[in-house]
Image (cartoon, rainbow, N blue to C red):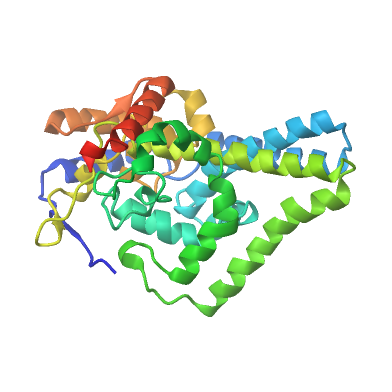
Length: 361
């Protein structure tokens, strides 16, 4: 298990303290909570309604198979939407000041097949603490067939990853539902949070929620729907492929693009940056302040603000970005963003191509 890392300490009037103070002053002046507001609640109703509504129509409306296939695709999109718009904020404790509300909404992850318990360990803890640091950040350690870190071992097949990676992204949700949670849970390897003892109840909950999602998406459709079994199977797989591609692209555009850093610890096992500046060096935005992109990505098009303030609801990121940008300019700290989605996607493609080059090994 890798040892804990240290970041540079924060001085009294440096970037980190000034930025935190300005964000606190913003919420104080606006007399508003850092948690969800009315707009966020409407977004929640819309995404949860689409998620539950498309599922209910599939199970009980008995539409023709062609319409059902469209509904499976819509369900795949809604799985992604409710996961990143509702579940993600809730798991970070950012949706509500009430823990029980966050706990309830976080179950959107469990019901869709991704363990909340393992997500907190892999994402909230390992990824957010040690973003893009080799050996610590789980999100830059996907299947070995994809290389997204300069220090990762280069294999001959990586030369073609800019072509096949986007196909593999479609399998991300299927992998999470059937493989990844189990592997990570029982191998217990999550950066320097490895080898932590799981409480006995977590063994029960891991299988309990998996059984629920298998029942919802793999048993009930064959029991309730009138389509042929192979039509239902195609629909289920399409749902997972759509949600997998959707979620993978959103997360990849934040940390696997050109110019983001992948810092290595020095000989004293330290990162030579303050933690907030480290987040800025390893994260990128796209379509900043675009309300459509914010809805479709759950605010994760503004990953910089999310990484700086993960305890603040994503609905506030457009306002926070103005404060963050202004402060980075004042202190000469880089702020990486792409104006449009195509630019970000193109950068990710180029990044994959560069990482597939043997000369980067």
